[in-house]
Length: 208
Image 1 (cartoon, rainbow, N blue to C red):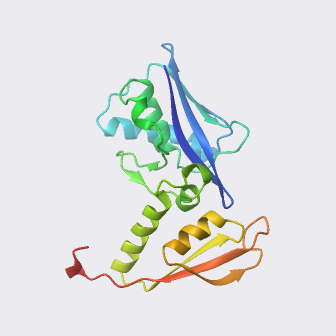
Image 2: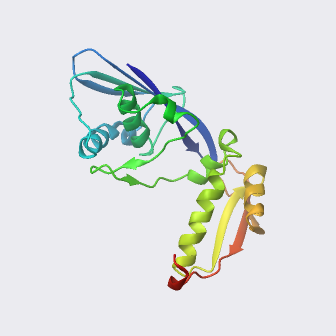
Image 3: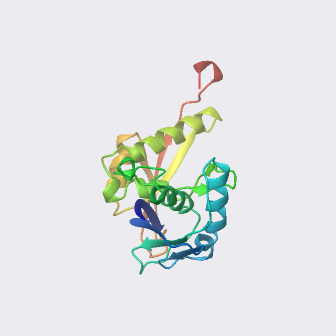
């Protein structure tokens, strides 16, 4: 039984696609993750198993489960692969139709009770070439603005590489303006534009 789930990763400021492949076979219990995972990714095994069980799904640990994070030559880190690994296992078992996962990028850290926790790098992933023109970046920013306005934050500052034209276009379309530049802001020495936008305060009587 094999399934493939699309995910993503961030290296520095750049996002790149990651395919989470799940293969299940045999009657010998085992759970392995390959594809240059770091310790946090390896520990996802315990979070994933507990989250699946506590979400109301059966999990009989009687098969060999192999998770491959492709491309295999790039290091994978963080807890963002918890959710795609869990979805991959359920899909390989036939609990989820693979057709429902087409054109969907899945990320998220799992709590032991099955709830999903936020992960870093979502905006970089949203403006990555494969995910452009799907409204993901704008959706994330709108939600950020809604929440910051609700707690009374008056201005949002964002940063983007001076060469990242797609992010700059997205931010400018949503009303962000260049407020300054930071030299060698990113690890590889890239400069960054600092962009800002004033956020109107949202009051409780506005129904938010």
